[in-house]
Length: 216
Image 1: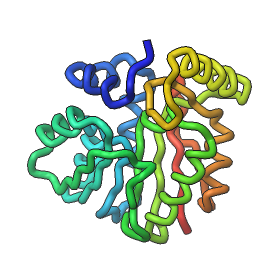
Image 2: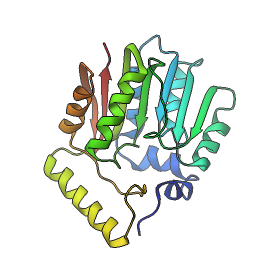
Image 3: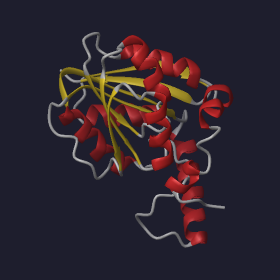
Image 4: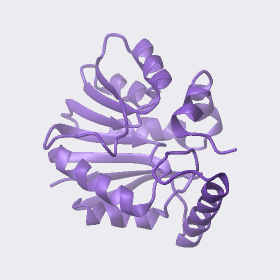
């Protein structure tokens, strides 16, 4: 059964951290690698789809005084994050990161982990351009996500998602929990198209891939 995105995660908030750390191959290592991939002088970070803050656990271990703006659609997830880090400099926004204003040159880094694999190429390109604009010179965008190896896999998953949406009569623009990951090469190409000059693949474990893109 197809579930609306926010409701899907609200129903699973209790066991979410354990599931990600123990059941999703590559996540535990990915969180640690993401923290090491941030610029050494990072002070202000934007987290897209911050959820319960699993990536922030690692970031705060390296940068205790980090200022974080986190965006997520699910209030239950944000509540769990607030409870986990009550004394950190958190500005949490319940909303859609495709609709939120990130500002220009406001962040040293933008991060996202296991959030963006529900969206198509065109939507991601627009988002990545806004991420690029939100970064200060020398900043980095670190995206750890579910990615596939080939365009054939990408296209097959997209077709299946479209079939399920049509079958369930989901209106256009409604976010539902369906996985439509892109091929790694497609993700890298979108980042370069958005303006990033140096795109590195830092981790590939299972289907979990960590990309780091720098702004000159």
